[in-house]
Image (cartoon, rainbow, N blue to C red; front, side, top):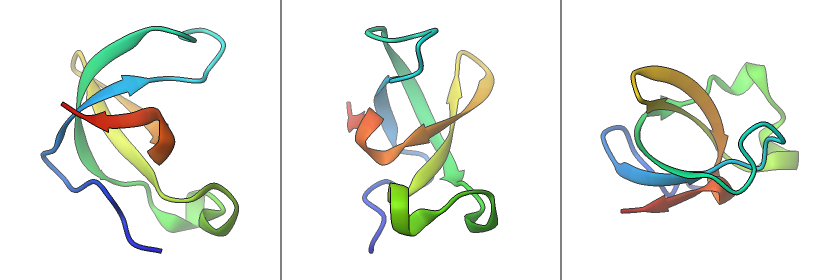
Length: 66
């Protein structure tokens, strides 16, 4: 399974988290989340992104290139 996004990509982040559901914000991909922190086979790639100066984790399907 190959990653679609790479470090430095500007993306739109539409979180499925209940606290942010429906809100779309601009973000920058920092890197892929360390693979020992999640089950890549079940979820697909996950990323560390920067949103307004704060790091967050995002599933690949929550991101779209700007």
